[in-house]
Length: 392
Image (cartoon, one colour):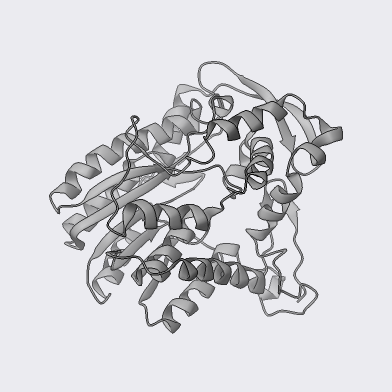
């Protein structure tokens, strides 16, 4: 069938198999051109491995460090009878696995609920079946709207809400290309605790505990997770909102996981990354407008980065190649340093108050935002014939 993008809100419900393949191949080529990393990981477990920062982490481990990888994700296969494509993450994983196996690398894929005990046990078996039998890199990069507690069976849902008082600001209606005013309501205490339950550090700790008890953590193992801090403008909706409360819980978990991994002469840390177009960020009010301006400013300065550039830089300049992690005063490793440069932030907020619907395309890189969004689902990549009848 000929596959076209069908966008509903902040989701694209179709994905292009050849476009997703091309997107993965481009990222692999970028990492390979950067050259092999010294003293890199040998076997990496990526929890949330099929899109965004998780996929970039898996690519950097495999094609930057020549590592075997185990990827955990929750993706949907195609349903040809109903004309439904697979999810982008499914096609991404197929493409990655093909390239990894061609390179002689072990690539195990576990598709299912990463919060469940069953998937943790399947993953442990896949690690035991790997050439080394243990992992020396564990990346926790899950983004999920809900979680079922494996012990109680209770399901929790995360919410995008403010804490304390409503958050009001201008935002971007990406469907209509219009500037709008948004008010993000205040979360209840239960909504805050539920969001922490879904997006906080509890499951990361459960993964480390399960892996440790199974004896599959290698000496010197590193575990990391990703967060976003951003400018004060986005604090009421992100850093100080329900998501931010969950991320702060994730940061506390990192300290406890670090203590566990020190027994194996390893470490755990959190990397604060740049604002990027991802399936998750597209759903957050205010953020799409901020990203559209940020892209314009950083591209003009020649310092724009996507997921793969960010993670390759994290791996090659801090994690491996005999480099040390550069912890900041907040206890985090910051790879968002280019975004948070004073000249970049001054550029963004010099434009913020001026922007309205009539000058949106002139003062922002909304076009670039839209292209990056569609690229997540395999659309708009050079070298792909989108009029071609493809096998889904």
